Length: 430
Image (tube, rainbow, N blue to C red):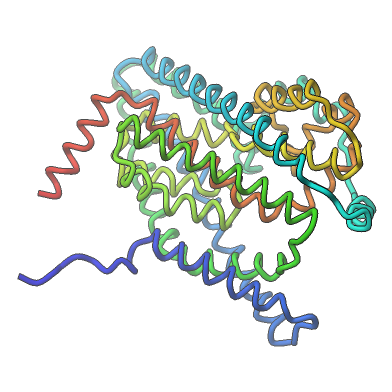
């Protein structure tokens, strides 16, 4: 009997992983050219267009996928109260992860930074490169954030790509749909189920080209990064990346210990989303891949794939509990400021409390720290340095974010449903 197993090279996860490694390798090699030739410049420009076109295609699917998934996940359930309970449980897991990561980061990174001795010439050059356009206080205020959650025009909010207001409006619509008569409710659910199924087919088509898209993005990224990551910058990169990798590995350990799903299946479901996230540096862009992995591999119920995952991608950024602390310690060292234990604790606590209030402006997560830096005596210009150095660490920050999103979706799914899903998969294999 012949072996009919498909080649591993046909796996989306393998293809995007190979694309990422090959692209970064080629980009680092090209970065050695001090004066790129016309051909090389044209090649990089072409790859930039290819990569950008692919990521635009991925982003194109987010809103049309999230909206029907949320509506079906909420209104399609038998009990709206149970859906609300799942949401509360999801926020509980988010808060628990944030507190654990903040304590871990504050403890480990503070000890690690004690060994950092900086070259005065290098720190001077870094400080001179600090550039930051500080937004108005109103743009970062709680009032502005709260008002932004209620869009004047939900269609415009969707067109602008501001996902959180769209998600909140869709949830309101979905809970209202659960209160209407059976006939109109069933008709709309049929439509939105068809829409979500169709969009998942579109996502599979786009992800099938992921190897090419990620290769193009990674090549351009590697060429821009180069190999000049030594000294103070190298130390900052090392601490930031190492802590994110440890936190990501910790999530896999919890999955293995709790045995809610086989950790191999969890890893297999995460590969495409992880690589897409690292290549694009956007957890939002990796949401379609997360939904695909949760649906096809883990067989999570609609409440998890259509409610919890979009909710997490919209409001949950576990990475802030790490990079806020690391960034504050780095800037304190860079400017020769002694950051007290009380101030470090304030940074860690703020990373948890303000996690769900990131403003919808470029680098909003970092700019949110402007008032915090002012209150603890750190120069606001230091945030400009962190933004400039964020390209490489942001790949690993996104990796942690997408892993934690899938983790919350798994942990909020009742064990009985997980067992039923695994039994279904096993019967199909037999």
